[in-house]
Every structure is written in structure tokens, then in C-alpha cells.
Image (cartoon, rainbow, N blue to C red; front, top):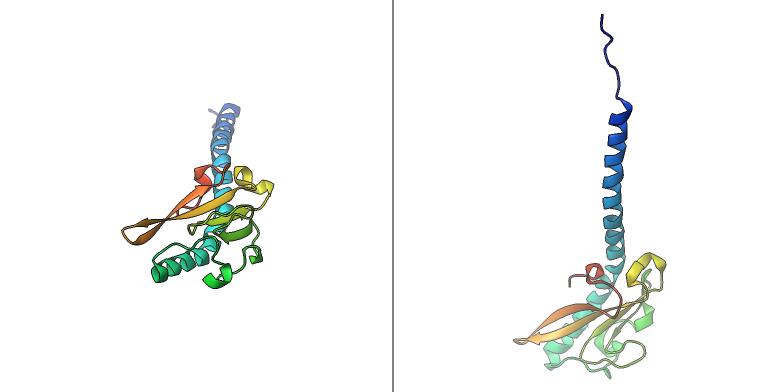
Length: 152
């Protein structure tokens, strides 16, 4: 009478462990990118009110707001009054140190290690007038790779 095999051999188990290790090595960096992008995405929700204010200003005045236009006159909160975990400030027309103008929205990210390469960077929302309408271009202030930036 032959003995029936029960369970798996050591080689089969080692192959399964190796496959799981390879899959984990591929999944962890993708997950880290995803979490950083979601944290930087906080800037998109905070930029929403400022973008709307710039859109309204443009539709009422036919021009983009200059740096001299205050947040109060645009009807939005002061730059450092936002209670956000990953964003320091949201400014229209100024980046905290210099005047930008032309309706650009500057969002300063916090200096937190969990933001990876986007740490302490700026997310810039620049309005472009196209056939009488505003289109928004999102860019990085310096170090954040485009993969972390919101689409719009």
C-alpha cells in the first residue's frame, strides 16, 4: 500500500513565500505614493474656495486679481487661518515672501516627513485666460514630483 502525500513540500512553500515577497516589494512603493498623493490632495480642497473667488472676480471685472487685492475683498479666509493638517497657508497673489499677482493661488505644504518629496513645497494654481474662460494649471513650487500633484 502506498502512502498518500499530505500537505506541501518545503520547496512549494518557499516558492509561495518568494512570490508573496515579490508582490509586496511592488505594492509597498505604490501604496506610499498613493498616501502622499492623498495628503497633498488636501491642497485641492483648500484651493476650491480661492479658485471660486478668482473665477468670480474675473467674471465681474474682466481681469485677474492683482496682488494688491486682499483676501477679504475676495471673500475668502486669510492665508494662515486654514486649520489643515498638511497645509500651512493658502494665498492668492502672494506666496508669503514675494508678490506673485495675476490670480495665482499658492498653497504652502507643511514641513512633515510623511509628505515625502512634497515636504515643505508649494502647490501652485495658475489661472490661464482661454477664450474668455479661466483654465487652471497645477504645478509644483520646486521639489514635488508631478505624480503627487492634484490633477486640477
